[in-house]
Amino acid sequence: MIMKYKSEDVSDTNRVAEKLAKSIKGNEILCLYGDLGAGKTTFTKMLAKSLGFEDEITSPTFIIRADHENNGMFLYHFDWYRLDDPEDLERVDFYDVLGHGVVIIEWADKFNHIIDSLKSASLGSKFSNQGEIIKIYFKHVQLESYGSRSNNVREIEVEYGNLNN
Ligand SMILES: Nc1ncnc2c1ncn2[C@@H]1O[C@H](COP(=O)(O)OP(=O)(O)O)[C@@H](O)[C@H]1O
Ligand SMILES: [Mg+2]
Image 1 (cartoon, rainbow, N blue to C red):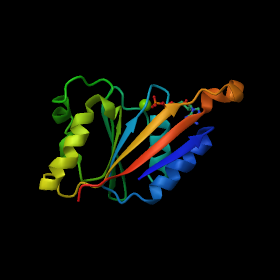
Image 2 (image 1 turned 135 degrees about the vertical axis):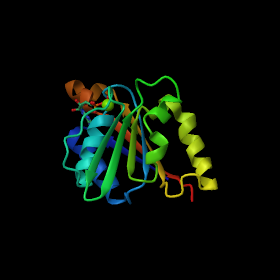
Image 3 (image 1 turned 180 degrees about the vertical axis):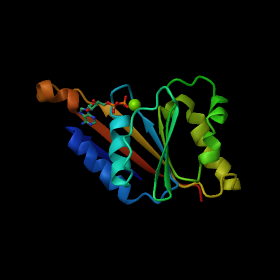
């Protein structure tokens, strides 16, 4: 199932995050796609807030992985932008956290084949508690009619149904 949203400002994006948060069970893998400035970190902040995480969420571009905890629920926030080798994922213990919290990956396109392999790997219950893989695409929309506001317009596509169990 694919849900498409048009966001005209940050508060619209917030509403999409709030809506998604309601369906989160706690072990999903959320893969975020989109160019620099498309809104991946902004969305992550809003989603984390909706899920009850009180930490200040910042972009983990340099640290690659940031962990957050709220009443025993974990959020693992990755940014793969600076990674070039899929083996780096082992160094940041990516595979170890799957199934143990909500995993959010910015720049998932870096190793999209890894994402897709998780889907099939889990069929053999390699990561037994791993939840649904949800892919979220952020796109800048340039519209003449929006004039100066066009910088704020985004298309957000949420792709559910990458079910693995
Ligand atoms: N509709 C919108 N949705 C999300 N962010 C928006 C929107 N309009 C403007 N912005 C701004 O765009 C920027 C997005 O940056 P960021 O979330 O860091 O992007 P990314 O993590 O994809 O590089 C923020 O400064 C945010 O305030
Ligand atoms: Mg970012």
